[in-house]
Length: 253
Image 1 (tube, rainbow, N blue to C red):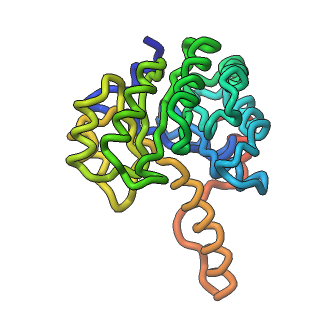
Image 2 (image 1 turned 90 degrees about the horizontal axis):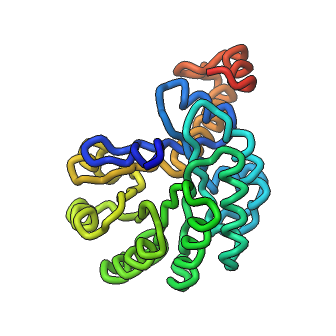
């Protein structure tokens, strides 16, 4: 079992924050987070491209190259692998592993189950040590059909997924049921209106991701600060100094 896989455990789940650039990843690592992930929304927004449209393969790889040697374990959000060709997805995974990534989040977008399962198998063949977090969008994009969710997760587990991810699922009873029904670690997306981290821990969840939340809150804080200054209000709260950000840029936590 890899060090990253060992972080997925019952009773003390991996709280996985999703960074949006080099500085945010280093700042999170400095706060003691042993693993950091990327978020496809931030990568796409930073490049002026749509998320979920397989348009940010090179941008994602560039960010992984920047972060892969950082003082933390890196998991990469790769949308659906940026291709429907399993061999191409496997090759992308090989590149990620080569630059230091230890995990890969791969979403099905409610596409054909056999295609996504083939992508997972191709990734495990190309980069066996890469932790594949197989995401199904039955709750994120669909109607939350429990039977369909299980059908998809079963196929992904059989294809070699190391963990499964069901973003959009917030009902405690359904989360607890899934924990019992899957054979690999279950990842849940944290929601400010859903169960707390402590509650998710009690439910047996193995990994809690923050997704694009940090990026969206940072964007809101930046705009809010500018609007407040325009209105004559002094900014509230602490902010890193110029020198502190410079140290992050040099890779020093």
